Length: 329
Image (cartoon, rainbow, N blue to C red):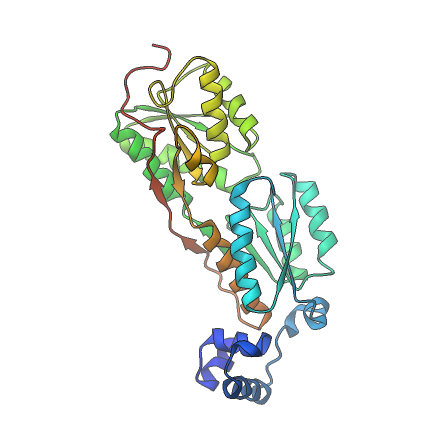
C-alpha cells in the first residue's frame, strides 16, 4: 500500500495525501479527514517501512554536503529547507569536508536522529550509500546510484553547451580543470567534454585533480601553464575564479589571452571582475525536489528508479571571447 493508492481511492493528488498525513493544517479540514479515513480503511501507515526514526517522529531530515563553504551547496540546502518546512520538517545539515571517511562518520552519527537523508554529491562508495539507504529513506543528489532515488542536473548537456560556445569563438583546444577524484559529476563532465570535442573537431586535455576551491584553481593555473590552451572549462566556479587569479599573476589577461568557463553559476562568479561565463543549474530547485521526494517516501510513496534530471543553461558573461592567438604566443 502506497501514498498513490490512497490518493487514487480518495480522489485527490498524492501531494494532498502527503500534507494531510504529515501536516494536516495545510489541508482543508474536511479533505484531511477524508484522506485519513481512506488511509485507515486501506490499512496504510505512513513511515511503517522505515523503522524507529520514522515511527518516533523526530521531524528531522539530514542533509550531507561535501563542503559547507562552497556557495553552491548553500543554495541546495536553502531549497531543501523551504520544501521540508512546507511539510513540518526541519533540516539537520552536516559537512563531509570532501572526505569519504568523514562523510561516512557524520552520516553514522546522525542516522539515529533523522527520519530520512539527502546525500548531496556523496563521496562515499555505492556500497556505502546503499548501506545508508537500508537504514533510512535516502535521496541522492548529483550522482546516479542504481536502484536509489536520484536527482541531478544535466551536467553532460551543460558541458556540451560550453564546448559549443568555445568552439564558436574559434577555440580549438580546451583544457578541463578537474575537481575531486571521488566526484561523480567530475567524471561526467570530463567524459562529456571528450565526446563533444570529437564531434566538434576540437582537442581536449585534462589537468588535475585539484581541490574544488579558489586555491585549487590557482594550482590548476600553474598546471595549465605547462601546456597552455586558449580556453579552459573548470569543474566549478571556485576553481574558475582561482584560475583567473592564477593567470593574472602570470601577467596574462582573461579573456584576451585565455577564455574561462565555470560550472554552477554562483553569485561569486557573477559578481567577479570579469564576470564569469558559467553553466547554470537550478541548485535551489535541486534541493527542493530532493526534499519533496524524501517527504513523499516517508509518507509511503514508492520511489522511482529513474533519476530526475533538471535542465541547465550556459550564461555567457565576460570571461569568454573570440580567440586571438595562443596565451604565450
